Image 1 (cartoon, one colour):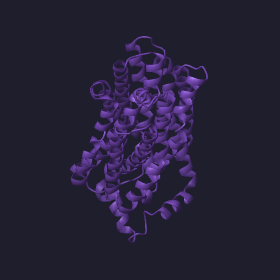
Image 2: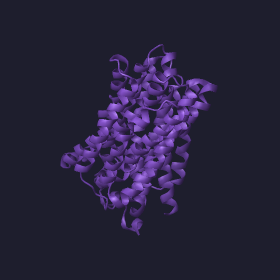
Image 3: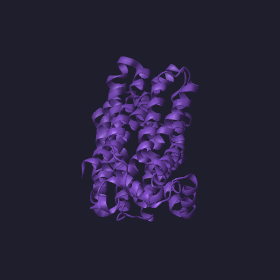
Image 4: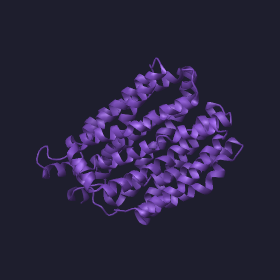
Length: 408
C-alpha cells in the first residue's frame, strides 16, 4: 500500500475508534450518570437507545455530503459534530439536556462509519480488502477498550463529567484528515464522469434505492441482525450483568471489558482475513454460530478470571462476524452513492435494533429476569438469525471499488 492509501485507512480507523470510545463511555458510566440525575439504569439505557436511533439521520446527511462534495469534508464534519456533542455532554445540567446531546452525538456517530468505510475501502487494494475490513471494524472494540481504560483510571479522578469532556479529543483528528488524507480516488473518478451537480443529491440516492430496493431492504435486515448481535452482548453487559447482577466494582468491570475487547480485535481481524478466501457470507455465518455455544462460558463463571475468559471468546465471535462488514457492504453498494448507501443501510439497521437495550433492561428489571437470562436468550436467537440472513443474501467479493490506476 502507498502512503496516501495508508493515510486514508488510518483516518477512517481512528475516526471509528474515537467514535466508539465516546459512545462506550456512557455504556460504562451509565450507573454514575443515573445516580447524579436521580434516575435508574433503565432510564439511562434510553439515552443509549436514542443515540442508536439518531444514527440513520447522520448516515443520510453526511452520506449525501460524501457523495456530492467528497469523503474528506463529510468525514471532518461528522467527527467535529460527535466531538462537540461529547464535550457538551460533560456540562449537561439536566437529564433532558443530556438526552438531547446524546441524540446530536448519534447524528455525528451515524455519519462517521459510512463515510470512513467508503473512503477506506475505495482507497485500499482489493487483495487485502478482507484483512483491512477486519482491522477497520475493530476500531469499534478498540474504542471500547480505551473507554474501559478511561473508566478505570480517569473516572475516579475527574468523575463522569470530566471523562466525557476528555471524549472531545477526537476533534484533533480533524487536523490530520485535513492535512494528510487525499480524497477517495473512486469518488474523484465518479465525479469526473458526472456533470457538475448531477450526482450525490437526495434525488439520486432515492432513485438508486427505488431501483435497487430489494438489495437495500436486505442490507437493512442484515444490519438489524448485526446490530442486535453486538449491542445485545455489549451495552448492558458491563453495568447490568457485571455491575447490578454480579455486584462487581467498576475497576473489575473495566478489566473484564478489556479482555472482551482484546478478543473482539483478534476475532475481527482473523475472520475478516478468512473472508477473503472463504467468502463474506460463510465467514459471517460461521462466526455468528460460534457465539451460541459460548453463552454458558460468557455468563456462567463465578470467578473474575472465568468471566474475563468468557468475555474474550464471546466478543471474538461477535466481532469476528463484524470484521467482514465494511468490505461486504461496500462491495454490495452502487458506486455513485457509496458514501450514502452502505452507511444508511447500516444505521437503519441500528434504528431497528435501537430498542434492544431497553427491552433487555425491561426484561431484567420489570419481569423478574436476571440480566444473564435477558442477554443469553437474546444473543442465542440473534446469532442463529444472523447466520441465516447472511447465507441467503448476495455477495460481491470480486467487486472493484477503486479506479484502474489505484488497482494497479
